[in-house]
Image (tube, rainbow, N blue to C red; front, side, top):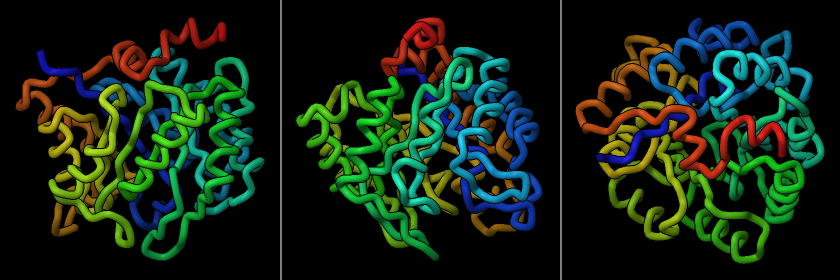
Length: 285
């Protein structure tokens, strides 16, 4: 049997607004409604960004707590990953605030971008010291890093951090392709990343904007896993004539996985694959 496909839902992100698309969930209630729907469609990991009451991206833990707690009520085995992005906040202590959440609000994973990169209109700065500090903070809190790589050299840097003992295996790596300013999407480029990925790591592929579908299909065919959602792409079609929904994007990948004869991973199976153990075990940690 083919390896079950882990679908990682990125429903909100930092950029989409209601003006860009009415389908993006910004409030806690909207996020939870869409997570519940996408969980029914086969999502096993949720990549969480929080917004303040005005809809602006926020790093404050108080805005993440009800989202994480609400996801636990949907399914306690769902893997919850919170963002520690430096896109709008550079201070490490501020970025790590969400790692201090306790009880049912405690995340399973947190994003760790492995280097600096440019987005179309701004830079995301992640220096070597900041990366190490965030990784150590995650280790101290028992939160597994969700590694994010926009260039092959970032994968090599992660391997160096494993050798130094800063990161612990098995690692979960999200490869993000198609962003203007970083690695483009192509089979050859994916191969450059995968040539650096150790055999015991789990990798997933995300495509930015119009490249999301191609990236997801490539991952399904190549035996990897997928990240999908309105954080990365708000359009359904390449011509950008129809706005997407999170549920629609997940349904499309679930259909592709069925064609490829890859079953969808349950949250419990995703936990086992990512080395997280059951939620009950995580709660006692």
